[in-house]
Amino acid sequence: MKKLLLGLSLVLLLFAVLGATAAAQASTLFSDDYEGAVKWNSTSSNWAIVTAYAHGGTHSAHAPSQAGMVPMMIYGPFDLSTATAATLSFELIYTAPRYYSPPSPPGAACGSFAVGYSTDGSLFTVPINFTGDTGGSWAPFSYDLNSVSFPLVGHSQVWFAFSTAQSSVFATYSQGAYVDDLTLTATVPDTTPPTTTATGAVDGRWYRSAVTVEFAASDNAGGSGVAYTEYALDGGAWTTDTSVDLPAPSDHSGDLLHTVLYRSVDNAGTGNVEATKTLTVGIDTRKPTTKAPYAASVVRYRTAKLYYKVLDTGPNGGTATVTVKIKNSANKVVKTLGPYKGKAVSRLLAATFICRLAKGSYRFSVYATDAAGNAQVLPAGSNGFTAKCGGGGRPETGRPHMCDIEGPPPCGQRAASVAGHRLEDHAHTRESSGHMSA
Image 1: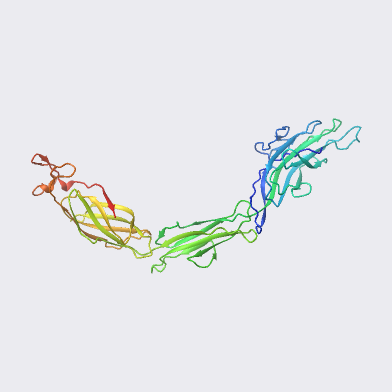
Image 2: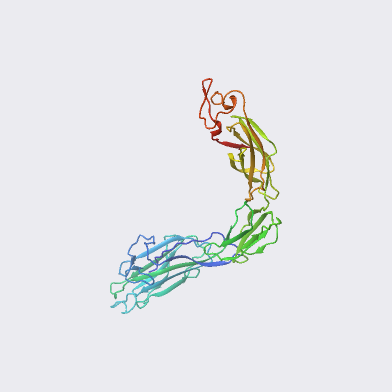
């Protein structure tokens, strides 16, 4: 009976580094209620999942007791190298077979339920041979894996096994062994710090209203749990809290690019401290202004440049979204350029487009929204724009255009004939694309 085996379903998840000051935490590394598929890795068969008895659910693992048969379940290897303690527990129904005739005294046990282990996968030691009787009911069994009987803590490879055996045919009937609700717990050092996330603001983004940044922390599975979260605002002292408010008063006194440092600490010993994280959040409540410092003119079908500048009092995000609108003498928008995102503030820039507007005088206005979402102060910066006639024909066709003809055609006239060329009523010509450049 010296090399009998214990069958065990186990999965072991342990942390690889021991910390001198880290608190050890007991956690369930594996549990099996035998309600699913077979998990043991033994090829010895004779163990099966059955429904005859069940401790919690509807199934358990069973092995028969029969002379000449040694049913085994073997599991492993599992790493216990970083554990400081471990416990194996399970529920068992078992009645050992008894001699009913000589040569042994009638009533003496001639079989057992065995619990075995190995640290090399081939040679198994059997410290437990149970020859008793659970009375047909479930009985709890638990074994310290850091004891003299099971000196397994600290080993990087451990195998376990369950086994039943019967040494004589001159024995009373035994129904074999039923095992259920198997659990392996281990105590390991917690060396993993918590993880903290910040919500309520996006790193590097600017806002025109107050912002509340909230912190949520979680510890690793089987860890000691989060003790506290703390933050430091703009170089200040660490404050224990799960949120921080960034105000945006109307007097602009809160306008600032804030730096928020945050981290969490767990309950392990002196505490595993999370690496400090950084969140930058800008508050900008001032509206930008726009300027159009120069009037512009262009020969039709040539590239027009409309110069502008966005002015934004700091602190600010440094960019703005710009839209340029061109209106005719009736104050009707006849062309829109943009919106164009990410345009630098406090720089003279130009919006450019191929002018296909009818000959005449116009006015262009510059509208901007800064990185925080503040729209420009009204009225928007504006200046004059003139579409002029020029010599030659259209660049794309070489044909003459309306500016080459003395006087405009009657409104709505679709075509006329001058020197054999087709002319267009430009008062009804729609405009096309434009673009912007620095």
